[in-house]
Amino acid sequence: MTQAVQTYAYLRPSAVHESTAGRDLALQTSGGAGPLGAVANPQFFSGFLTSPAAAAAALLAVADVAAARYYQPQLRASLDPVVTAGGDRLRFESFSGCCGVHARLDVLAEGLDGGELGHGTTNVDVNNPLREGLGRIGTGEPLHLAVGPEALEVTTLDGPMVEKKVPLPERWLRGFAETQVIAAGFDLRAELPAAEAVRFLRALPRTGGRTSTTGWVVPAGRTLRPTSRPVPGAVCLPGPERLAALQRVLRHALALRVYGPAAATAPTASAWEVVLPGMRLTLTLSPDASRGFSGEGGVLTALAAEGSAEDAELIATLLAWEPRIDPAELAAQSGLSADRVRAALTRLGTAGQIGYDPADAAYFHRVLPYAAGRAEAHNPRLRAARALAAAGAVRLADGLAEVTVDDHVQRVRTGADGQLGCTCLWWAKYRGGRGPCKHVLAVGLVRAGQPEAAR
Image 1: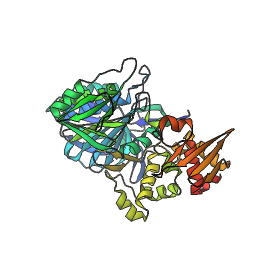
Image 2: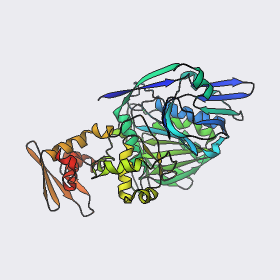
Image 3: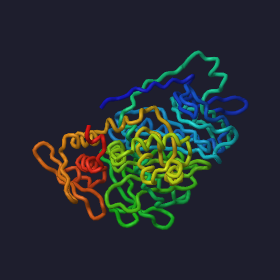
Image 4: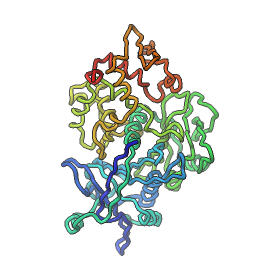
């Protein structure tokens, strides 16, 4: 698969500095976007962390995920985390190299003391000396946090002192797109107090052995009880060893919250959130350790929806790094229906512009260095569907459509619930669990009469 190369240019390495005045955590930024446009090295915050040891451990957990591959772990990965300043919080995000785990640390307003929070998105430098410095931060020590260089540094340095050139796989971008669609379907399924949260997480395996397992847990009083199958109320725990990064923060945990779909009979994604003082650390797991988020296909319907590209352009002009995006408010501002707004948000998510936080039950805005439409152009199912529609391979009838592919015909039916199904092997295997097949997409394109279908 074609890879773009992103160059991170930092004025100096991130570091933990020690002086008689205390410790200072200086996180260097690169290539940020803000309300006034692109900035080489933006500054988002300069102030204190109210829980330094917990924040240091949580940042290390996000870095652990960025450096890990839970599937084929012998291959290492390392991408610098993304940080978004939303005016009332800092969000640090990373993906594992296998794209099956998404980590997000939300440092909320109560976790920050002093300093004004900016707006924008950038990458932050994470290096081995920084990790060692974070590991030495103890409880009770004051810790000053600077996200971005000081103005003096920007004016006195001629250029970047540190450069990292890293490949950004298309699946990483598609992972950001898919996680916001998947997480939007989550509900709070269980909440454990601190003692039970620590007991449960410490009992999980740290490694997956030769094969990873998919388990289930069901709420039982103040804890979670393992179950061998998806009984009513059960939550999927796919590849429990992938929660190992949470071990770093257990001594600071206040609670554990679990999010997932309301009802599941097959392995599904789930989100595991450790509540910390003034912070939340969340790991979202794909439905299987060998299955990255990039192939889930949850964005395909929105990408193929009529007019979604134009709607997305309109909605993009109304976003401003809000920590919570209200689709109803956007509908009122744009004149679009709520469904069209959600489809537009999903489409914007394919360029990394939209995330979803189950704790807030709300979307949020960020900007990543990806061109709009890049994920759509590199999605093989959508490309194949457009080719089928353009070639006249779709024949429509009442409640039934036939799609001719080479020398065989696939039949697409509309069920009583209005959902489409197909006779192809993809549909038989996943039953829509990984998004629509190319035949269903092609039928949708033809029925909608989109201009793209005639290309």
